[in-house]
Structure formats: structure tokens, C-alpha cells
Image 1 (tube, rainbow, N blue to C red):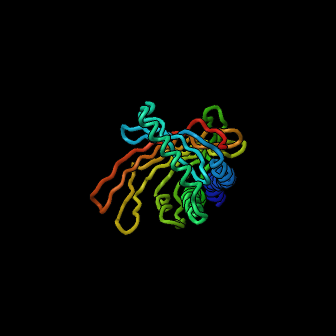
Image 2: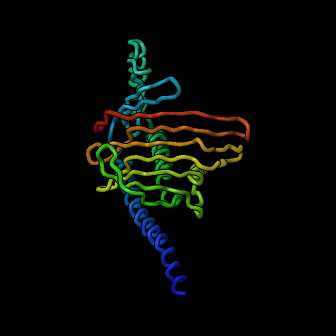
Image 3: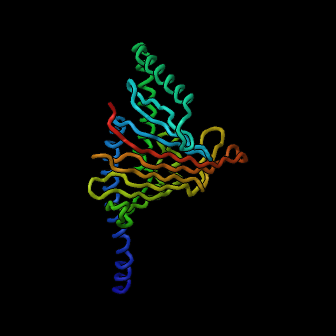
Length: 257
């Protein structure tokens, strides 16, 4: 009896540590969600450059807030400045947009800004859903570009029910998060689909091979996106395959006027 009791106690020790580990991880994640929400809200206070890479094409835009929502102005193609004629056309488009936005009726202005805010809210909702969608484990500590971070591993929570259709992808994913130890900013996130997930009525299916990587950088007291790479492996109606990779890079953040 004593041997059996000791054996059971020894077997229970790893479970106790796992429970403590999970509890600590959940606290870290909850704090990071609050910090990341503040960072997400602060992003609208900045202008920046954004480069979108799809296949062999790279487009670089200057993104600035204009009358309550962003305006994207093309600056370069494949890292080459626009030709004089293209620059003139982009300048004309910008001036026309300024006139249009400043001459909007209150209803038009409200509709434009509301659409922008709703699109951002959808993105933020997915971030908030992560707390419920995953079970987090504290895997250790690592440095990312000289920043001391907690390393957390995330596995699907079997009891999670997606609040919105877009969040369904979370049910088939696992990943890792690097969270800075001092203020709990998100420094780096890696996630990948480990089991197929079906969407909607057209039987679209996201499959293993789909993954994303996000890296952020400190700008003053906040952390803002630096790099996002998304690889998609999906099918529609069971036979039409979709494979793609898109990359986005942000740089030259500056306070918007």
C-alpha cells in the first residue's frame, strides 16, 4: 500500500507542475492581451511605410491617416522608385482624395470611418479570442533581439467554440509566443495549422502547411508590427487547391500629424 501510495504521489508531481505552469502562462497571456490591445490602439497615431510582397512583386506604400482613416500612397515597385509619370499620377490621386474626404457629408464621413474601425475591430477580436482558443504552457525563457522574453506554447483548447466564423481557424492551430518579461508586449508569434478546418457553405478547408509568423518592434513605449508572413494551404470543394505566401513589412514609423 505504501509503495502504491508513493508511486501515485510521484506520478502526480509532473501533473502539479504542469498545472502551475499552465496557470502562470494564462496570467502572462492575459496581461499581454491588455498590453497588446493598447499597442493596437496606438498604431492609428503613426504614419509608416508598408511593403507588401506577393510572388515576385513587391509594392511599397506610405500609409498616413487622412481625415480619420488611412490613405495608402504607392511609393515604389520592386524596391525601385516610381517613374516621374507614376509619381505625378500618385500625387494627383492623393490630392483628389484629400478634396473628396474634406467635402464629404457627415453621413459619408461617418460611414467611411466606421468601416475602417469595424475592419480593425475584426482583427482585434481574433487576438482577443486567442485567450479562450488555446491552452498555454510556459516553455521557458529566451532572448529575441536582446529582449528577455517568456516563451509560451499554445495548443488547441478542446472546449473552445468560435465566437465568429473567422476564429474557426484557431481550432486547428498550435503555436508559440514570445512575450517580453517587463511589460508583456508581444515580441514574436508563430502559429501553424495542425489539422484541417472547414469554413462556410462552400466547403473551403484550411489544411496543414498553413502558418503565419508575426514579429513586432518597439516604437517609443509601444510595440508595433515589423514583419508578417502568411503561408496558406487550402482547398475549395475538396479538389481546387490554393497555395500562396504573402509577406508584409512595416518600417519608418513616425507620429502622425
